[in-house]
Length: 311
Image (cartoon, rainbow, N blue to C red; front, side, top):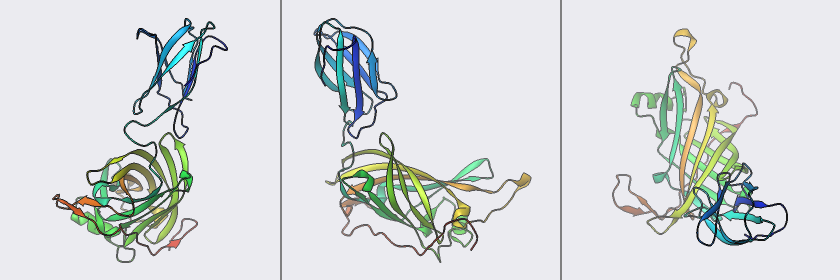
């Protein structure tokens, strides 16, 4: 940060993250040499701080803070014009790297969740999850070139009800005998805001391949107890069952469908830096076990389609 005495009186600053996004909730505080606060101003939607309040000439301390970011402090001098031009202020994420380091990352299924929610009878929701899955993330130097591949064992669907799970595995829905895996392969990454991206890719489900976008949030990076480095992500998507030729339904009173036509997909992902998870907890919750092989990424038999339609 720096200061000058040129221009109109007041304080000017621009607050951004390391990857260039405006920090909309940043707060700039100015204190004099006795530690007394003489000015406090908040950033606007573009991360800009503009205050028309003139300051007496002299030395000051400028502190910029924002929730989730490490504070930045610097000395500044106001000349006789009463203006302080702080310039650009870059805030780093508190307690972790701004973005995951480039290179391969392996999804840890023991600490990740792949879930889906469907409406039932138009008044409530049924929650389910897949318990067997794996995948890899490749973080590129140019973040837009990053890639992800993942595979899910379709038969691992679990909604907490054995009869319902059996029906979901049948030809009415997942048809696990013919299509045992569900896969996702990304094709591009587009910034959507601070720490948020839209992941473009193709989902292969029930023998159909369709483009599906994931709305991705990056939650941070940090060390794990086994000497590794982990990154956390959350992603959501919405799928229409008919797009994947899963058209089974029952109509109850007043024309209400028993099962909603839209599925909400919710992903909470931990990924370990490298091509394998070095350590993970046993399925029974016992001592940690060494994992000697990389998490597999499997292929699925599927046919691309360009539009809706029957088989």
